[in-house]
Image 1 (cartoon, one colour):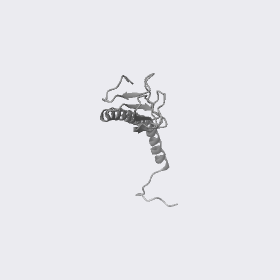
Image 2 (cartoon, rainbow, N blue to C red):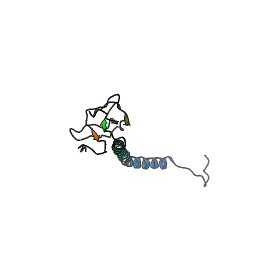
Image 3 (cartoon, rainbow, N blue to C red):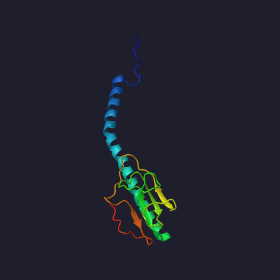
Image 4 (cartoon, helix red, strand yellow):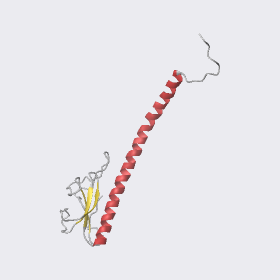
Length: 143
């Protein structure tokens, strides 16, 4: 048997196991906080997307002097009679003022479905946001 030189360096198996255990404990503690951070970001992004769409609809109504409607739409073509907006929504010029999107009416904005875990719900009985030709809302106190 040969004796190891005194200047030999390296890591023992026990030292490596201790370091890996510490990393595993720290990772386990950090993962929930990271998940909350991701969820918070997705929530802020969805809120921002809806605010932008609503503001664009109001400005579009005033610029075009036409009624504009924002409504939930899972297929990005027809308004859903639903309180769930997280499946996506559309903004369109409502030429016949029936608050339903017809094939001849121009869609001015489309927002796709939000990521899983994000829910956007409107108040009961409020399925649409309508802006009049002057940019005012006709009582859509949607929350």
